[in-house]
Amino acid sequence: MKNTIILLLCIVSFSVVAQKKDKTWRPLFNGKDLKGWKQINGKAPYTVENGMIVGTTIADSPNSFLATEETYGDFILELEFKMDDGTNSGIQFRSESKPDYLNGRVFGYQLDIDPSPRKWCGGIYDESRRQWLYPLEYNLPGKAAYRNEQWNTVRIEAIGSSMRTWINGIPCANLSDDMTPKGFIALQVHSIGKDDKPGKHVWFKNINIKTENLQPSPPDNIFVMNLLPNVLTDQEKRNGITLLWDGKSTEGWRGAYKEKFPEKGWEIKDGVLSVLKSAGAESENGGDIVTTNEYGAFDLQFEFKLSEGANSGVKYFVTEAEANKGSAIGLEFQILDDEKHPDAKQGVVGNRTLSSLYDLIPADKNPRGIKKIGEWNQGRVIVYPDNRVEHWLNGYKVIEYKRGSNIYKALVARSKYAQWENFGMAEKGHILLQDHGDNVSFRSIKIKVLN
Image 1 (cartoon, one colour):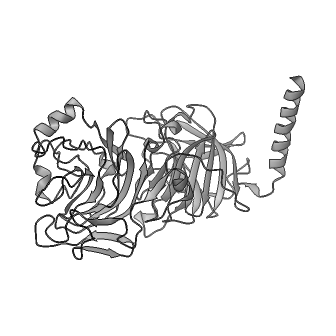
Image 2 (cartoon, one colour; image 1 turned 180 degrees about the horizontal axis):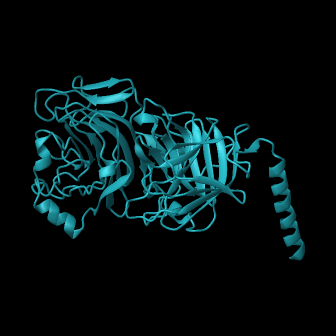
Image 3 (tube, one colour; image 1 turned 90 degrees about the horizontal axis):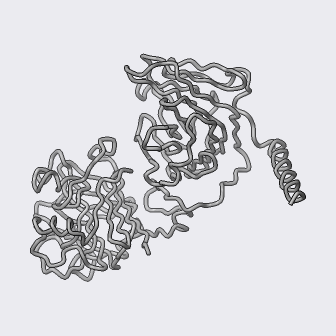
C-alpha cells in the first residue's frame, strides 16, 4: 500500500513537472502588474495583490472588463477565481469592442460566473448580443460544479466552432457556433444595483493559455447546443442525435395525408425549409408536411423564424387517423407572432401563444427567451418514456406535463380536441410542420430517440 502511494505521488509530481515544461502554455498574467491588459467600459478598479488580479465592485458603473491587448482565436484557457458571496462575474472570450457597436460596449462569448440560486456558473452567455446560448438547464449536473467563496478552476476550450467549459473539472457547457471566431479575453466585474453595497471582490490567478498543438478533451455525454445550421457535431452523433431534415432535399418528409411532398407551398433554399405565404386558410396551399417515420419517446430540436403576424406549429404524435379537414391532428408546439396574430388572444389564459401546448397549456415564457420577429428561435420538445413532456424555447423550459394524467385529460375535455377519442395518446406518431398560410421558416431539425 505504501509503495502504491509513493508511486502515485511520483506520477502526480511528474505530471506537474511535465506540464511546467510544456512550453506551449504561457501565462497571460505575470503576477506583478497588468502589463498586456487594458480596461474597457466600466470603472471598477482592478489591482494586483499577492500574485492575484483583484476586481472590486463600485456604484454607478456599468459592467467593467479587464481585457487582453492580444486577441485569440483557437485556444485552451485555464485559470482560478474566487468571489465574495452575492457578487457576479464572468470570463469573456472571443469578444470585441467596436465604436460602431453600442458605443464600444463589450460583446461576445462569456463563461458566466453566477452564484445565484439558479446555479448557471459555467454556462455560456453572449454579452450584449444574443444573451444566453448555453444555460445550465441544459446540463443539470454542471450546476454542482461551482464552490461559493472558494477557489474554483476554469477551463475553456475554443477550437474551431466548438466551445466547451469546465468548472473544477466538471463539464458545464458545450456550444457549437461561429458568429465570432476571434477576440480578446476579459475578466468581468459586474455592475451592481442601486441598493447593493459596493466593495465586493473577485480574484483571479494562474491565468494560462495554450494556442498551439491543441488537443480537445475527450468527448463527454452532456447536451450540445449546436447553432450551426443543419449539421451535427461529433458529440451530437455520439449522443444519438440524427437529422430529421438534411437541409437540402425533401427526403424523410411527405405531405400530411399524402404519399409525396407537396408540389407547391413549400420552399427549400439556402439550407432553410419555408412555408410560403398564401391567401388561403390553413393547409389549403401546400398543406402540412410530416416525417415518413413515426416516433414515441424522443428529444426533438428545431429552429424556426417567424414573419410578422405569422402562425404555424410543430405537432407530434400525429397519426393521420382522423379524417380532419385542414391541419392534421396532434399535440402542438405553437409557433406564433403573439403581438400581431389574433390567435394569441383566443383560447384560455394564453394557451394559444408561442411555445404553448396549443389550446391546452399556456407557456410560462421568460422575457429573456423572447426574440424579435425575423430572428431564429430554438424550439425543443422532449417526450420521456414515462409520458412526461417538456416544451423549451430559447434555452428555457416553458411547459411540463404528463400525457394521460388526470389533469391532461381534464384539459383535453374542455378543449377543441375533446371530439377526438384518446387525443394525443398514441404510442407513436409523425412529427408535423404546419402550413397555416403564413411565411415561417425552419432549419436544424434533429431528433434523439429515448429509450
